[in-house]
Amino acid sequence: MFNLIKENIRIALSSIRTQLLRTILTILIIAIGITALVGILTVVSALRNTLSTNFASMGSNTFNINQYENTTKSRGGDEIEKINPVISYPEAKAFKESYRYPLTQTSLSFTATSTAEVKFGAKKTDPEISVLGVDEHFLNNSGLQTTLGRNFTGFDIDNNAYVCVVGSDFEKGLLKDLNPIDKVISVRGAKFRVIGVLKEKGSTFGNSQDLRVLIPIQVARSLFTAPKINYMMSVMVEKEELLNEAVDNATITMRRVRRLNPVQETNFGISRSDDLINRIAELTGVLSASAWIIGIITIFGSSIALMNIMLVSVTERTREIGVRKALGAKRSTIAFQFFVETLIIGQLGGLVGIILGILIGYGISSAIDFDFVIPWSAIVAAVITTFLVAVVSGSYPAVKASKLDPIEALRYE
Image (cartoon, rainbow, N blue to C red; front, side, top):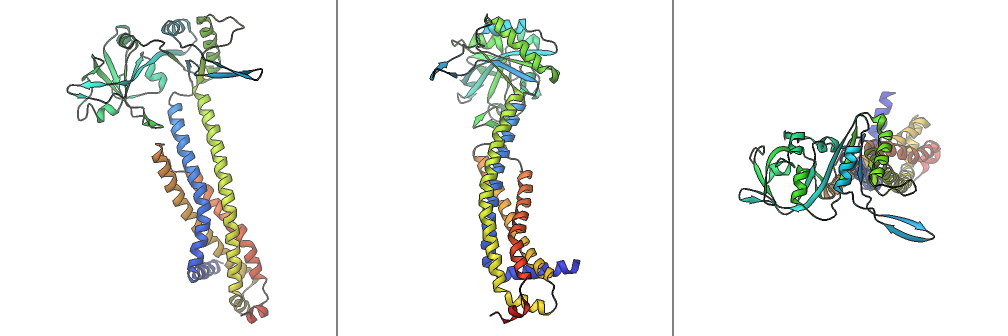
């Protein structure tokens, strides 16, 4: 049995070499469909990996309280734009003092500016640094870690110490070739001692997450006094099973802080990290389904082309089939020969399509700054798909070849 399979593979490869141009064109036709499928799934995997990494870093047991950006509600056919008020510092502080749900810790923070210039000695950065005012719980609640130095302590925050934690890009730029810890940098004329360096986060949609400086929240409030600053509260729950009750309790507490009566709508937003991750999964699921639809349409055309080419091959080799049958070849042997030939062509097309799809996906992911991952699921899907295409496309030509009458086949010119 093994020798028969080996012989059929040898005959199939010999036939492929004989019709090299036609085989190459067939492989390319199959490869186009697989490239479309693998390329799109590769980009979708990179998108899912990037977004999940950014949002899941908060942890599945974390939620934020912030201002809704803009919401629209339709009333009687007319759309009314509603803008929620910013969360002021007194409100944020009142929430933190009032919220006493068990096994939780709350952090306050705000973005002081995203266009700061930071100086170190005679060197300075471009005015593109984000400065955040934070408390001692901000790093833990945001899923951030330090690779050097330490986090803020309650003493730093309570005593308004002029210390800071910087993003990883400062090690590569302003503080290059230096140990950043205990170096003094200047932000808006105020001098801060570096106590920690954040672990690299990379960029999201072209925006670097590593060009930022974290400083104590009260110090930030004294240096940056823009009107209507929006504060954010982040709450981490130690036990995930308590998350729903913690969110409900936070909603009640924040409504009390804003003095909303029972009939008034909630005018702030609560976003849970697991909700964001679920939305990402839904989005990427739709994109994956679209990829399969596009890929299947293209692969369907490829399977028709492969079947037609194999039917032409059967016709051209009618005399060869007659000779083999006259020498005693069984119908199953003839069918298996053509079936193996179809499988080899299909798998070669799949291999070329997988390589091109991954390269295209990698190029697109790099261009739009996504975290590329090898799409193993797409590769497995492509291998299975090309096998099914070969089975479907090769079955009819193989059966047709096996049913040829040997006498009529030997007469064929």
